[in-house]
Image 1 (cartoon, protein in one colour):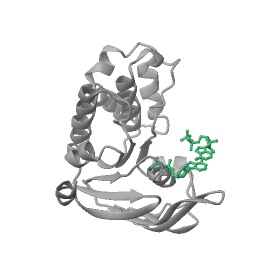
Image 2 (cartoon, rainbow, N blue to C red):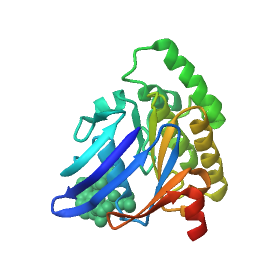
Image 3 (cartoon, rainbow, N blue to C red):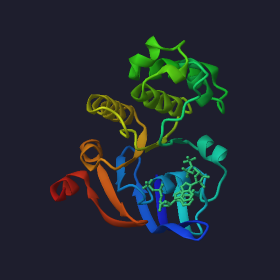
Image 4 (cartoon, protein in one colour):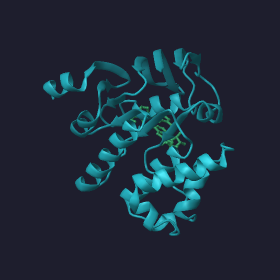
Length: 225
Ligand code: ADP
Ligand code: ADP
């Protein structure tokens, strides 16, 4: 489904990705594990059209998306949940979710997916009329994920959904990630928390200072943990 081949990405003259290659097959949960500053967010930003690789190729369902506009990448079926759970604080939960569908025209589909998001995240249903800025950190993470789902992605890019959350909330979020995947959405999950990431993933890559240093099935990597 996604084939990243030998990409280099720079910020000015700082090289954040050094010959990164990875693949995601349809139906998988793939995780990219690495420490702070390793290049994880840079990879997701590149896949979602916010950064452009200087070298290498990115193929998504057979066509090149390297350097394409973010909006056309969303239309092609890739949704990105950036780190730091950005939600529009002065808008309600429901308004934030509706925004996620702004590129869609299928009203019935949108209504159905809104119901689906509320089934996945019952807490958002209880708080649908509440201003998003009043939600807890974990609820804001749920909302950011829900908003991405409203774009009807085939591939969901998740940037450190566990960051800063209490262990119980992390467990809840990860079991919902599994649920979303079971319903047919392919997932690329970026995490510092290797233990949690490997518990949910099929396959994993490890990144260190811009290079992939290890890859394998989650089971293989759990044994090296
Ligand atoms: P991670 O997501 O793994 O924490 P990042 O992809 O955010 O890592 O960062 C990779 C490297 O690129 C780091 O050295 C970081 O300091 C650098 N970097 C990230 N964003 C910028 C930026 N906007 N300008 C300059 N350097 C950046
Ligand atoms: P976002 O918050 O949208 O993910 P970043 O965190 O990459 O964006 O960057 C926020 C701002 O901080 C940008 O202006 C970026 O250029 C700058 N920045 C981020 N990381 C670094 C870094 N390691 N070195 C220099 N500037 C950075």
